[in-house]
Image 1 (tube, rainbow, N blue to C red):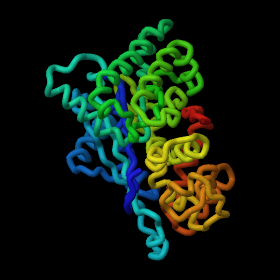
Image 2: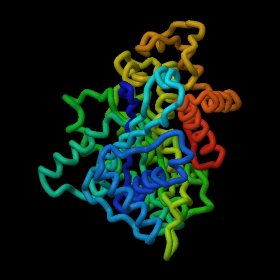
Image 3: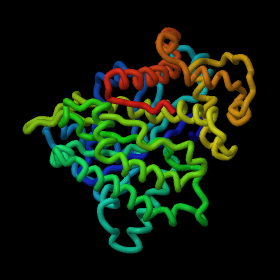
Image 4: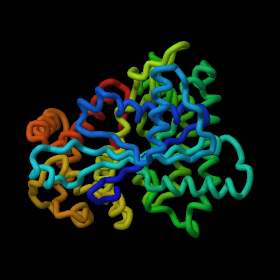
Length: 386
């Protein structure tokens, strides 16, 4: 987390060509520009680049109104910046007391072609390295599994899954020497790798548990090998999850003559995943594991501010311990734990309290936590317990 008055979070999306990455980001952004969203939401989502706003919105409208799919972005390695700007509270004191004013999501779309074929020469090879370096600040990475490809290999899904995961593995190994300075593992690197079923509308009978079981049965060994490769990139590899989190994604419901953009799955969890999941996971890792100080500081950068936004500024009993010394914020470890463990009725109470007091930051972040809980209840998300 990079902290100022804006809390910045990065998410990286990996998928082979045709897996739906461009459609996904267009559907995500376009839905936030609909009048219903603008009227009811506590925040606005604003593209950081005017050209990207136009392109993504045009892509979305083409799907919604003309059943026209966006053109694929081959070898583009695009990063999109979205500012999540809270609506102003009428109480100036409430606005002034916010720990931060906005959340910025940086969405990195890594070209699938670089997992499937060799680069054309030194210039493209360097572009591939530079593109990957740009996403090293991501806390969360999505590895897309294409539902259409699963259906194409029905009964022999392992053929596709083993090939897909082997391509991811090989692509990462090709980058390793260029990313590691003198072979030293990286402190900053995506540490939460979520397996995501894209185009999940094509497999309506598949819930997230079925998806997990399919991957484990057909390609469990390849997932384990991929985790070992990822562990070779990072300092403190115990603070890494791969093949432990799963989700379903669908950008719309696609028919021959229409695209129903309102029938989406999982995209409403992108912001909560980027904002809340790393905070919860990182605090748990630092509390449970012997993690080098430099790594722990990186993991907990901004965690204190997010905890304050979730539960308020009250200071709980000071128990000391490693978390308190590393947070860089005048809070006890108990405050961090209370924010991480906020759930159930207490979480709903905090959300209602934020709405009643027009503390839109608290209301938004507690809503994000509720969204993740709802994803698990609906069996479209499965989070690691580690």
